Image 1 (cartoon, protein in one colour):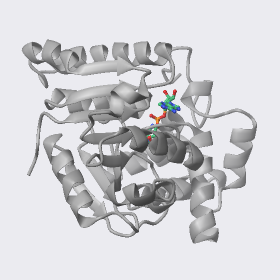
Image 2 (cartoon, rainbow, N blue to C red):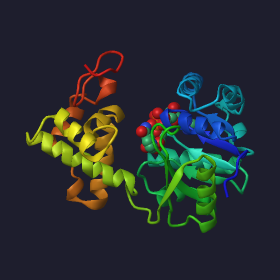
Image 3 (cartoon, helix red, strand yellow):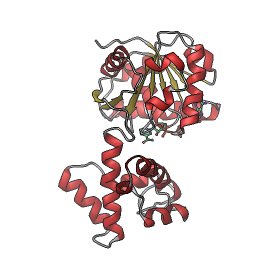
Length: 293
Ligand SMILES: NC(=O)c1ccc[n+]([C@@H]2O[C@H](COP(=O)([O-])OP(=O)(O)OC[C@H]3O[C@@H](n4cnc5c(N)ncnc54)[C@H](O)[C@@H]3O)[C@@H](O)[C@H]2O)c1
């Protein structure tokens, strides 16, 4: 059953952490958002305020809900204050196994013994992250939200080898409380359901581009209009960063072999610093405001 009004600790106030914190606060939870630097927290606060205003303009949120939502959010660098009374912890630090292990091990030491522990990894092994948590690994589950969390309706839950059934059900109730639709990846496997399938789709688009089968623009348009996708796989790759994508498919190639091997063209783009929108160039060119030329 969905439970509102829980204490939620979000670790990492970047793109995903800020979005997950906003989502939880909008749905009545009391949220502590933690990062390592005040400037990141200030940016997260500004992003959330801006996003709430936009939701009001689009009639997706009542004006009267903005102030109470902001009042439920605490921005802090203090880990102890963040987790000491947490019912739910959601980790959203960078996609590095050792960092996630360290951040969660520190948090678990300071958190109550009942806290549900979610990790927002896109494709790392939940079981490996849990290896740093001792018995608390039974309370660890993959809670994979999508970008931007306030708009994307999916929450992919991932069961690690030691994740208990009670943990999975509590995570489902938490996602329900956020009005997300849940899918469960029952077997902890790299890329889970979503990142694995989508990485392959983008890889095939890349191969077509490099073989000269069609232009980037036509490949993206074909995917958008032919399969009702909001964005093409190449333009979305530019948005997320091609270095991130290369790193992701290298991990999938390690797990599943040749079929995920990165293309030479992708390696060259990353080596040349053509990382997508953040670098001003990727499959497409961008101006200083990140708009496509
Ligand atoms: N960006 C996406 O589209 C997306 C989508 C789904 C999942 N993810 C996953 O979500 C996670 C976070 O990604 P992101 O895009 O938000 O990254 P990001 O780089 O925007 O944010 C990560 C934040 O973590 C902070 N951080 C680092 N060490 C910390 C610590 N010890 N304690 C607290 N905060 C710390 C950083 O300062 C940074 O603000 C990754 O695992 C990523 O794979 C990302």
